[in-house]
Image (cartoon, rainbow, N blue to C red; front, side, top):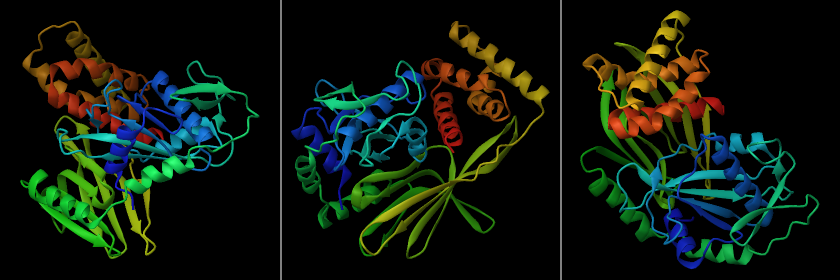
Length: 378
């Protein structure tokens, strides 16, 4: 069982970027250019490593390897993105790895890529890359190559050594449980559960009972053995259930207009643990967005646009406008889910404006974009 935090440390400590490892300060998967560059690197790493894993570490400064972290990224649909754009797509996983010195909510992203064993190529055009293009790694650079090139693995031994050095042990697991429950989340209700005598899942959050069901907010869930953060949200509410074989979460999102707010189930995630020391993670989208009259939403959409324009120009908001700003990310999301395609671009445009103006609204914007990402790739 590999401790992913140790794996990242070994990658950073013993290797510059090379044909099986790349590092990024951040990923911009919401933009066409950022998405295209990510797919190019995935394609190149898969083709350069047909018999072993390759990696992209996200949240690291390029010059000095300083670990600065990125926001928690929900990876559940990233395989769908890769499948949509790549022929012979590799298996891909994006995991959120906590580091003790990072602020709450910040993690290091670890993208693990496993080749299908066949030549991977772009399925269709994206940004300035043409459908049919094939990429390989030359040192730290992803370069286009001829399609009929032979796949060769030259990194298997090096990657196996790095992964071996990142093996977990009992001390690291116990330290991880104690740190999670007694230090990082000492102000929250914390629990743990051991599965198959090998896997330890810890979770923490504020509990709220509604009828016979317990909901958690400010939720953090981690698979301690591998130092992987499975779920993190400062806003949404989650139900948790488990038996001897699996751990299940259902995430709920709060949406509505004005004071008429309700919780809607968004996604169910089931982690199933096996006797042979492996586990599988399966997600199922449950979301059915609420529907509203187009006339009402058209008025809200125009009001949001005017509000965003006013902020962009540095004008002072009236008290009523400040109140509307709190709901701007959610109402843009509702507009998009009800057929207002332009609302997605407006959400992206609002990112830089809200980040400067209001921290709570900016956090709401990130949650809205996360929900949108789940829905789009399902």
